[in-house]
Length: 122
Image (cartoon, rainbow, N blue to C red):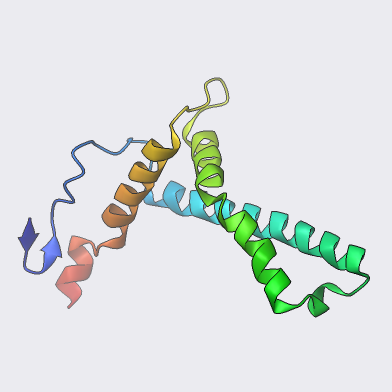
């Protein structure tokens, strides 16, 4: 499995979907975090408005509580965005949360390791 200190075979047992490229992988995560930021800011703004304070004055504990509620839904958001981007206009993908998580982890291992050209530069 390891050849000259690099992982040559992640060993996931199931091939990654061909459609999932490095560019699409990065786009999926960009959209996940954009969604989290947007929803979080809306909730933070709502709390600030109800408390009659500017958003910048929300105390740290409340900030963390609000963020935690969105972070707990990370898996669901990842699955929803993964399915939207992996499907087509006519046929949305229907991966389960567990499948989407496995594929995205496999993509991370695959795309995070250095390419052959990058290894030659060292």
